[in-house]
Image (cartoon, rainbow, N blue to C red; front, side, top):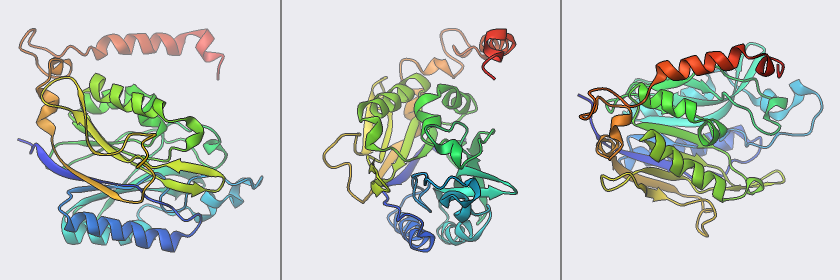
Length: 304
């Protein structure tokens, strides 16, 4: 049996653009501080190691993220993994990751055994494609609380397919390192997170950048959301919503959550062997047929 109750920390983090040493020192500091405050999992934002904004250099290999990209395992993950091993915790943070000629917008997951795994962002919005390659695999981390999924920003806000996959595989918690700027407004992300919690019946722990990053202002609003009071509502367990007056402060939010709430709401039968029918309501065998139909449709193929 998996444990149900754990403590999660999410960090509003300001990344000093291009200053890897300074950012890494602070990433390690937050990971250690979170562990000392009792957090089992500490989440930091997308591209926390370097800053988010794409530079305007027309030469791809000379762009900041590609110049500063690190391997996983590598120097940054080694430093963070020393902390996670010392304290027996998990820590996730964003970085540009190099693997051969490819560079990904990645999230490194540092584990209690001192090893690291990596998630590569699947969907690239705006101008991220100018420096990053697309990833193609989900990431589930084995923990005492069951599998925990990882997504990055656009993957989580806009693509419920990923969250449904994680939930069907047994995940009750998804970690979401993100970099959300004021350019995208405030309410869309709030609505997306709340809809995801409800429709996929899971907890989401989001960590966002804050402050100026080049000419973009990052919103902060790191938060922990999940099912509340054994009903299908959404509870904000820690942090802020996008647009809140306190969202843009540099701080760490911590909450102790009960993952069993995902199995005690009126629509828990979606992914569980329900009392009504003896089977889950979610029907992937149908969705697979529909997706195969999309892939074989000449109108879809023309888009590629």
